[in-house]
Image (cartoon, one colour):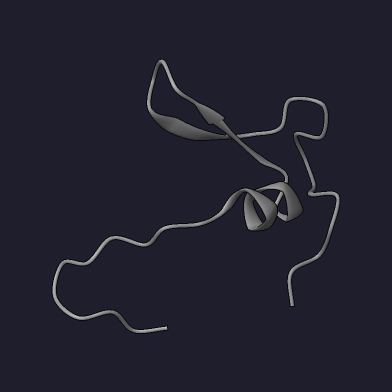
Length: 45
């Protein structure tokens, strides 16, 4: 999807869980799930 200008992308909880990504609120970062560091649980299409 192409967004106009400097728009920020917002991902919901379900897509983040599907990608096996966690939110670190203290560092304000997305991190790979430490329980599965080398591959996600679900493949993206």
